[in-house]
Image 1 (cartoon, rainbow, N blue to C red):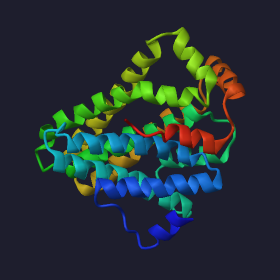
Image 2: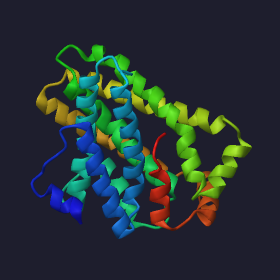
Image 3: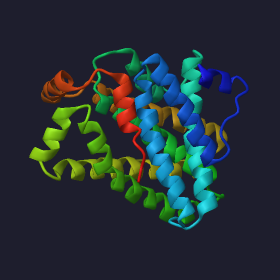
Length: 262
């Protein structure tokens, strides 16, 4: 319950270090409650730590700007998490992702994809437009694209994490070799390309138009989320097989995804 106490004063993170600390709170709360909301939080913390390391190592063209982007971006998820827990309205995409945690049917991968869908396809473009100076969005593109490479570097690690709690995913990885990595790379790049288009649109809109654009983008993103949650008949069969062997122990799943980056 610590996360709820933290948010009573709405002290959203101001640094990437604070983002990681708040994600810790969300994860610990999820462990206590045995909530699958912790799956995405654990993955997100892993990515955020990687970004933090990249900033410290001079990986990005503009480290301070990247930290601002990371914090603004993360706060959209953190605010949505808090509002959902408090019974307040959230975007349709996040509501779909959070409500999935109330059901037993989704597998871990679906929980992760639902979170990534809401956060990348909706939140990332909004955050990029907010951090960019007027007329200077293009200056952000190099670092924006560098995040793609950072995410790609984590694919194998995340698959290894998941194989420990979802054996069939590990077996599929062995059978189809690197095709799943290629698909993951394509999917993430497509999502981030979409996010960049969202940012470009946001930069030329007034405040009222931005709100309308966020709402229309949310409608599109929730449609994608519904396809993740309710895929084709063939995909549903594959998910059913994965679910048969996947660990139902939420704590084990969260700890697996939370393994530290080395």
